Image (cartoon, rainbow, N blue to C red; front, side):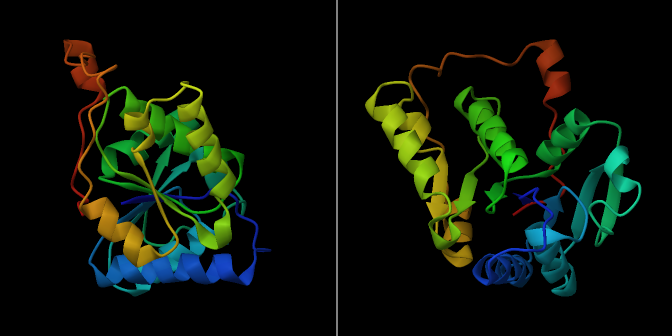
Length: 207
């Protein structure tokens, strides 16, 4: 399970921090392993600590530039250092079977839409979930609905994004997720020799 929220600020509403900690506890209770962007600060730090203390595996994938100093805090569990942000995203993608986004800033939004667009293009069929704490993602979800209404996004693509307000509901829906094939992109074929090299998935950490 790849969980992401890249804002490391500790100054968060109490409800956000409690939700992050609870998500980590639920992941551990269900024996789901965590892959994340490393560090111990902010919401992701709370998730990683709870998962680790609960007995599940934790893998933090950290660009070397961020591993220096105390920018993101010490990674809890195993740490894999990579050269660039691009390498980090590829490693996180390759190690994850599903994705959860907590409330976060620009980096979180980038990762959501990166993974979302790859799913729309059938590069992967892994479930994507938003933990919509305190209505944080309401406006984003309304934007996606508006994009469907104005025909910039198909209804099939809109169904790729799962959103719930509790960790239990979100994990239940991610585990029961069945991809909806979008007719407009169903004929895209990524099975070239070069694409296979890029898209080999290491699914050692499974739901």
